[in-house]
Image (cartoon, rainbow, N blue to C red):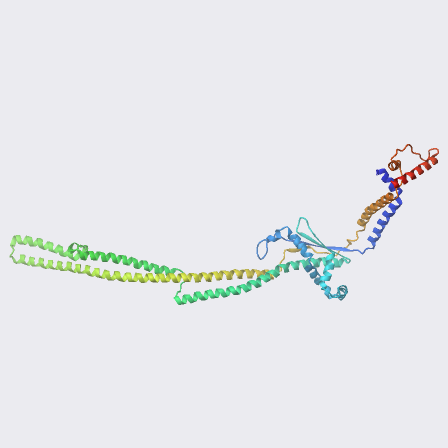
Length: 471
């Protein structure tokens, strides 16, 4: 089909096409004017996903996920929010609303779910593409009611968000409280075992100072034993030595040194006097008696010192035995204290572990209590809905434009369908296509004998149309 043929068909069927076009546009206009007017109110919300949680002090990673905003939209569209909206608007207080619900549902279900489903049908949630703003649109026959419902949905969503955060926190708080009671019992039992052990063993100080003191005392006794062993070895060597005059104590004794000096002086004087007076002289004999007395005194003093070495050797043996016994006793005490300290360390660790667990659970319980009492939310009302001044539906101008387009399509379609059902020859091209023969000439009304040619053309057209229909 050529464009010329298409125009000829439209011109031939113009009455039907124009009738359908006019009926479509007129019907749309009348319906748009008759339909009740609806008003749309919009409430804008901002969902803050970047600010840290005021209690936890950190940004929740779940808020940064791409599906977070889609989840919030699903929450707004949920039955829980719709039921809360019905409660906020006070439908249960209206006798007319209650009666309408009973008639429609025959008392089945709940009033909140019935009116919540009705409100959800007229609710439209539109999130912004590049921001965290959510627009809540509600359409209603009354502007004031539409604004009230839009604001009620925003408030119900905020309250539901708080509940969804608070309810798990309260459950966690109750669980932590029960857990804390058990941990408190464990801590008290551990502290009781520690106190009982300290009283049983007489331990006052729980640190390592007592152990250090006892170890220091053991080291001191060991040093004293080493010193006593050295002194005993020296005394024993002096006692066993035959030449006691050459011993260190004898050589260093001042009395013996003085006696030896006096004897030397006396012997020198005796030698001098003897050479002058002779051996039988009284002074010589007196001097010899004095020297003999001094030698006897020196011998007694050396013997006394030698006896002191034996006493020292004996005393050293006794002291050494006492120190060995004290060291053995001190070792047993140190080992006993070390064993007690090991047991005490285990008990102290049990107490510290129980205390840390108790404090950790107490801290989490306090945080959960704060979260359970918090009424803060990350959703804020950017702009509340106000009473709309102009209706949003029906859109007469847009409906008329759509009806013009639709009426044009319907009119053209109807003309084409009628043409296909009742095929006509309207041009030389139609005749050529129908008979598959070339057209020799075309006659119009101004040509002589045009009426004869017209009859021939009409007859030929009729025959061609019949032949085409048979074909």
